[in-house]
Each structure stands twice: as structure tokens, then as C-alpha cells.
Image (cartoon, rainbow, N blue to C red; front, side):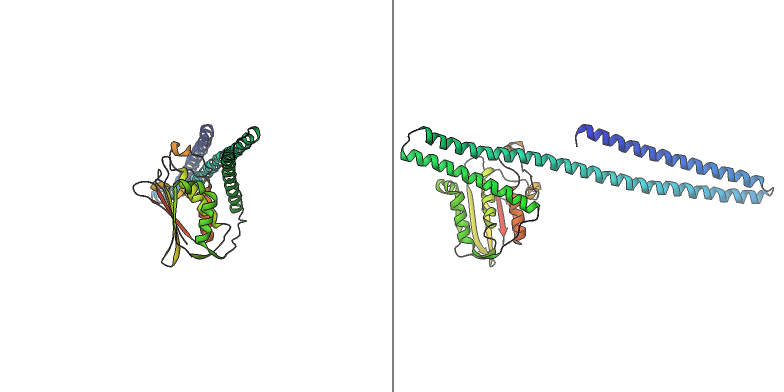
Length: 319
């Protein structure tokens, strides 16, 4: 909530609580006045001192019971009121945070969409305006193709996140060769990183699994993209797929900035961006790991994140 909204909300809550306490005081005073009048009537109704003393004592007990009842019921009501107010305040705060996250997401997506489009446009304009050699043409076309693939990945993520949010993501299971699927995914989307040695993989051959061949590549793409995103110096990303206890195990490790232990569960929340201001300056929409987690859940796979040694992170997916 904004500072102004918080002050207004706090003022209203304070006013309601003070008014409630004031009315409770008035009720106690009114009850005491009624008991006092009854005591006076009892004193005037007889001349026997023993009866007067007894009636006054009974009325005094009645007064105390009423006071306890008013204060007790009032306290319970006040606690319920304060609890309800705290829930409302927490809900408003959560909705405000979500609205801010969605706003940042839209800004991030807009920026992420414009960048590859502008880069591809520049490459193509250069080809049209200049007579270039064959090698230079191939280089520019390759750059444009890389930007197109980047745009394709972003659009896929946005569409997937929308399907997940609307619960329209249907799982189409079939027996697939994970080894071949993951190798093809890496070759299609990360060939420059493979050529440079920034990305290395060790994939055991012939690993079969009953899963969705259209969704599982998104797990690889987003985990590898995330590893490169937070490797600020010379990136070293490694992917390993092997059989562990007769089940496929995927590991994606990097030597980047790592993830704080307190954030290792939050990183799978939608729109969450890990780290401090420096790491949040990196490009990203905050939906990649959210998509990974939901796809893993659909496949009843467990994803965990560990600290790497001496630095970085390790994402493990146990199918």
C-alpha cells in the first residue's frame, strides 16, 4: 500500500477501536448506574439490616458479573475485529504487490519483445542497404535468426504462463526419448553457447520417459536461460541427464551469483525476481522458473535448487 493509503487505513482502524472502547466504557457505566439504583431501592424497601446487606451484596455480585460479561464479550469482539482488519490489510498488501509485479512484468515483456525485433530489423536493413560478402551476409542472417529464436522463446513463455494461469494446460503423455529430445532442444536454442564452450552437457543415451514432448523442452530452455542470465562473468553452464535409482535425473549447474537460501522456494513464484538490485537489473520477466515448476508438477517431478561449490546454483529435476 502507498504511504497515504496506509495512513488513512490506520486512522480508520484507530477510530473504530477507540469508538468501540468508548462505547464499552459507557455500557459499564450504565450497568453500574442501574445496579446502584437497584441497591438504593433495596435499601428503601425494608428496615431489616441483614436483608439490606444481603440484597446489596447480591446486587454487587450482579454488577461484577455484568461488568465481566461486557468486558469479556467486548474483548472477544475486539479481537475478532482486529483479526479481520489484519486479514484485510494483508490481502490489500498482497494485491498491491501483485499489481506492482504485473506492472513490472508488462514493462519487462515490452522491453524484451522490442529488443530482438529491433536487432533483427537492424540486421535485415544492413543486408538491404549494403553489398556485402557471402560470409558477412551469413553472419547477419545468423544474428537475425538468433534474435528470432529469442523472441520465439519469450512468446512461448508468455503463452505458457497464460495457459497455466487459466488452467488450460493439458498434459499429453507419450513415451519419449528424453536424451534425444534434450539434445535437440540444446542444439536448436543454444548452439552459439555450445560452440563457444560456455554450455556443456553430458546426456546419457537411451533414457525413455512418459511425458509431454511439447512441454518438457521449456524446462530445459528456462533452466539454461536462467543459468546464463545470472552468470555475470565468464559463464560456465553444465547440463547432466542420467539415470538415478532407475529414474531420470536432470541437473543444470552454473558458476553464477547463486541464490540465497531464504529465496530458494520463492524463485518458483510467478513474477518473483531473485537477488539484490544488481541482479534484478538483468533482463527477465519472472515467469521462467514459475513455468518450470508447474510443468514439473504436471509430470509429478520434484525440482529442487542447491548451492553450487564454490559458487553458483544447481537445479535438480527428479522425474
